[in-house]
Length: 117
Picture 1 (cartoon, helix red, strand yellow):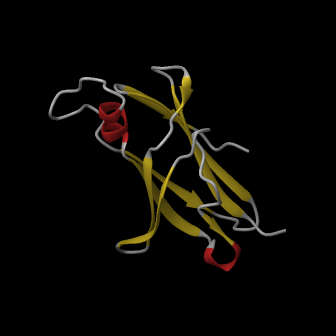
Picture 2 (cartoon, rainbow, N blue to C red):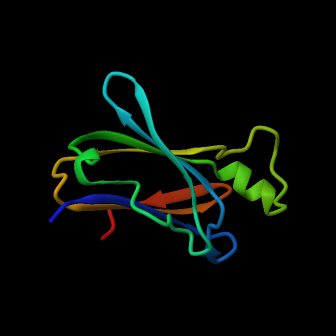
């Protein structure tokens, strides 16, 4: 079995999936290496795994979620310097044969994450 990386976003302020959120994935190996940029679908998920197969390796990664852009597009009034402009989640992958799922529960002023299944 080959492992892979996935994510999804739930908008707790509106009680629905976070649709159209820009997400960047970086590999951290001395410097930030951008691996992919995606947008969440109607279900708040990505249409395909962010990484899989040989490109999914043990190491340190960062997911960057563009939260202020999302809320502004929804018509939410935020200050110029939004409290959560971007949510950055840095995490480690120890075993690339496993599924790593990184969900994000977010509002304009808070967020939560965990290793999902």
